[in-house]
Image (cartoon, rainbow, N blue to C red; front, side, top):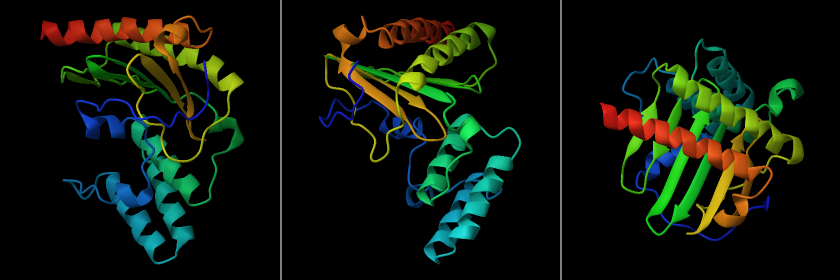
Length: 225
């Protein structure tokens, strides 16, 4: 696998806003543009952190984000986002938790368009198909959880052999290509290559196969409803 930032631009997602939320990598300013329906939601702390940042009070902005992380049962995607914002403000995660696999986003592109599958350590998952199908899975289900755990376990190899990448997110893969992004509190570890090559890669091949198995599971669950 070629573990570097690929600058070419691939096909658009059928649900671009959902896809963007899967990486947890928005800037604090972008997060503050989201208006929550309930002012008591965790997003209120992101708004407060942005307000402090705008007046130059970085210390208070960090405190708001750390308060967000202290909330019970905060979802993994939002925890990743909080750490993205903390890194933006100059704070790095503790070494013992910095490079732990928190989520994995696997994308493949073909003539039909872009397919995105994301899994997280809180056992949630999201699938976006080129057809427009979007499955945001949050229901406890042992069969789905087994697939998620398998993908996260395989991601450990990627983390052991790569470093986090900083800067703008890599564009979606071109048709015939795929990308794998392992999400950590220290930043994403991202690799891209031709799909045919990636399928035979020691790190990428098992992850692609595990992702395909989960995709089949999620599609079957949606069709059974």
